[in-house]
Length: 432
Ligand code: OOG
Ligand code: NI
Image 1 (cartoon, helix red, strand yellow):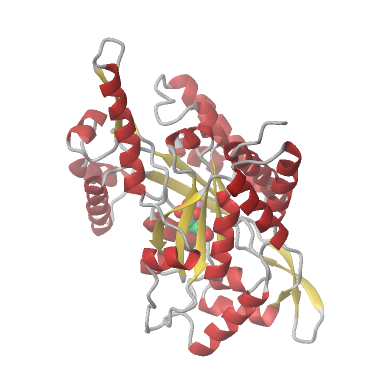
Image 2 (cartoon, rainbow, N blue to C red):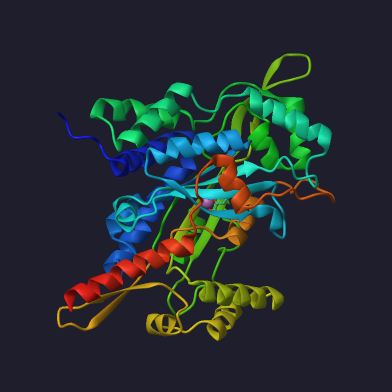
């Protein structure tokens, strides 16, 4: 009997195969990956502690994807599919709350276990259109959107059945793995089916994101994000290559102390050719600009107390309309500038293990999740316009609602980080 291919290996191969496909669809992505690899090599050879937040091997393979779906049924199907790759929903993000609201609620599918994260941390930020939110959709439009979404099939039922079988068995044979990965990747390719122009335009007026989700017959990878060890260096190198990046790096400012959470930036993808069906039934070629290139740098995971400091620091930076130097100095008013300081004030998560001489060695726990504020900033900076929305009932979307809608637990990220630190504490006990 052959050994079963484990979910982590399926996940690593899925991420690599999506990356391969996305590079053929969005050539600028390949440039981004090349530049990211160069940035990481430079960083690794000039910083002895380069692997403190993940091995160079993990970081080089590390990606997050973003997809968007139209209904709870579609989100549940995504959950079934990703479970076969050992990816589970973590956290609930409400992007309708943002300064510039987007009509979606989201979660991120990712491995939850420390060992699984180390093997391959692939994660997919998954947004669902909030059709019940009256600020975006009146009763008539809501009914038509829901009807449109109900009619389509994002995933082949055979693919979902295969996924459930793999989840139940805990793996699959090499032959099944090849087929499963090929079919799963295909489900996220950009469709060539003509788009109904009038329908797409009607939704675009509400929100370009609504059009991207419910104006077309399928879902697709919206972006695939490599991780870099120095995002400021990446920003400079991309700009030097003539690629126009968004104005700023989202998230905490660059400063002299430890990096925390997540810093991200992006560039607008070029217009992509798409086919449209017009009112008279003819098919014409045009272009759409919905996909983009994003890149990120990950820092240490913050505790709830640390997160409050982050919120306060960002609010102060906003209020001062601070430039990057001022932002760094405001940040320094809110955060200690050493890992020891973060640990002593319990602002961030650290593993504590007994060193060779019995002394306690502290190592940071990397942030594995997303930031709603940055996510909204990334969404917005890559759109031509925000769309229009009015007053009305926000509907009862919440983490509990989403959990019920997809029939699974949505993990609390703080509980996951705490579990990682608790496991390391046990190892101190064991060594004593
Ligand atoms: C998702 C935007 C959020 C991130 O990295 O914060 C995201 C989307 O554009 O669908 O991917
Ligand atoms: Ni992203």
